[in-house]
Length: 163
Image 1 (cartoon, rainbow, N blue to C red):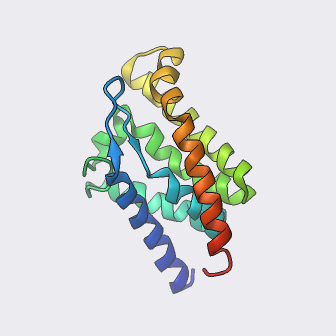
Image 2 (cartoon, rainbow, N blue to C red; image 1 turned 180 degrees about the vertical axis):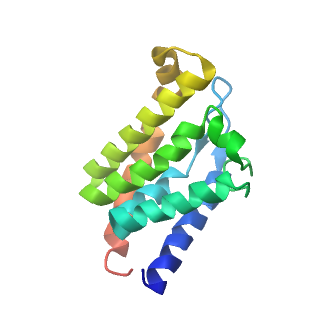
Image 3 (spheres, rainbow, N blue to C red; image 1 turned 90 degrees about the horizontal axis):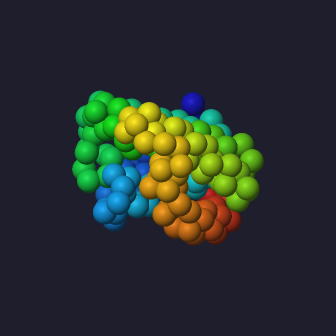
């Protein structure tokens, strides 16, 4: 990898961390509403699948080793093993699919992969049914995540060719 690519991947990992700090806890689910998917969509579509995955993977690994990059200034393997861990790991597939298809449909596919991984893990960890997990972890977030895809698409159009 070129130095420029490494720096840009690190920048998107840091941006994801910053956007994770911007969150709204919801009373009916341990999954908070945050902005972390926005830079994931942008990283995938702007940097391509390889570098988008690297940026997301760096973010996940930083949190896994204990740096407070996850929402609420948390980090560590316990967060990844907890109810939200599948969604965080899902950022990696989301970045890949956003970059692979490099259009809003790619971001939608990435979002669906994140929902799938997150919902499966949430059900496994909490013992809830898939329907209950979808009601708590997907349904309340669909509108906001669609707005993030729209914002990411606009950002990518403006930034394309500048990286």
